[in-house]
Amino acid sequence: METKHHKIVVAITGASGSIYAKVLLDKLEKLKPQIQDVALVMSDNAKLVWETELGNKHYLNYTFKTYHKNDFMAPFASGSAKYNTVIVCPCSMGTLARIAGGISNDLITRAADVVLKERRKLILITRDTPLSLIHINNMKTITEAGGIVCPASPSFYSLPKTFEELAATVIDRVLDLAGIEQDAYRWGEK
Image (cartoon, rainbow, N blue to C red; front, side, top):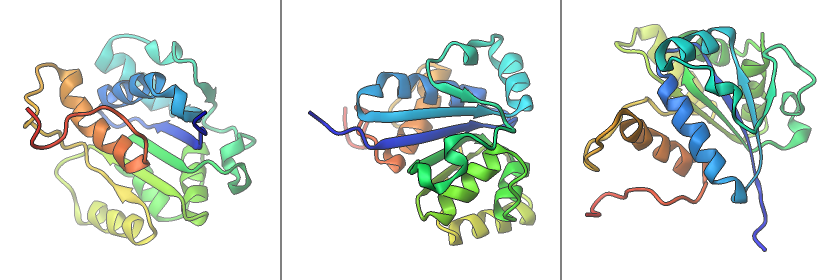
């Protein structure tokens, strides 16, 4: 039997792009057989943006354990819980700045701080455009600290036909970065 070794935190901030979070959560539900645990934390703005952009509260329907944004007793608030990946999707520039500055003022930034100090994977799906020099310098800081900045820049070579398929071109890349095996379009396939 395959060992489940992925322990993942999905953090959703109030940046526009709730479709990316939805596609990520949908795919993680399907990939549960290879994942030991998925923990979910959302900012208040993330819930508002989800409801505005997607017109529903389906973030309540996922089977993953959900933690309040200020629950510092959550297991992944400590490195000893051995969560190996934190994915912030989408990641607001404010959250990126707080992570880059080492400011752990909520569970999202604390989870990112922990995963960086433990030399594990932090993947930030940024969505804002254009970028200021402050944003770029914060991205540089995150990268130098071992994090991965993965802008929500969809690809078109798989000929996506829906918004979800387009968002999946980013999320498939994120899951690859996290080391999760999946069946996804690969360059050169027909």
